Length: 334
Image (cartoon, rainbow, N blue to C red):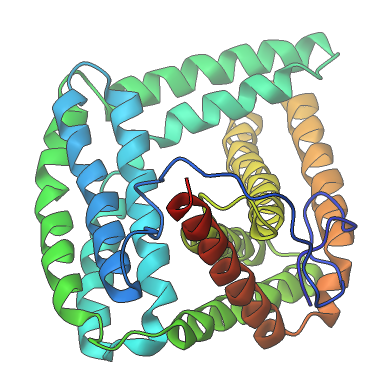
């Protein structure tokens, strides 16, 4: 199984094991991806350090650009967690757990700084399709409430204070990671990690389809985002076949993210309904949107049920290594 151009916008489809070989372009080096200039282990260490250095740099602008700083900090921590998960089969459990705990704390302790902003952005998208006057009025009421929640959770200086508090977790994760990665890290280790993540993503997808529960869809979203970051890590900067894999996993992660944001928004709308704020039409519009998106994303990934995680991981690694080799050759002949 490979990621194919013939598949839908979010999925993985069967294709020939012979990858197409378009013309190689020399990419701009991506500092957050696996470097072309280092051997595998060193490249992993350098990338992990750069990812978390980017997180720590957000402290410098947390006072002047708090929303952007928190967003970039959390995104960098998620990337680091995905890279750590990619290597989990190769790491000693005790060392993995220590690093994972630091990153989990850094991410969790900053979540309250972003929740209201995310909800307001989601509400803006929902509001564009509202036709009933009472639904629009309820949306305005909810936006005011969310703005108040944001201002209470994130007063001036709060983002800088929280990021400064969690920075120690980030630096400890950096130091521990250098010691945890095996001296003889091999591409087979990367393949094992991808297989594990793919298997978990497929399992989450099946559970989300069968159970239809919100928590199962949340888990599928988290696993798909993790998979997207992992594929991005080994392929970013490439202009060959792996680019298509990256685009498809990224599209799926975005689609699932929009649904889970809507689920959280629906909870906020239902609070208005319980308070007698006349938000029934807004609640119905949100629920209808969720169900339509849920049905579509499950249908678009139906062919995942026949995917073999080990075969797909092996193909992704083969394509990524071929792309890296082609790029290095192109660079050396310039």
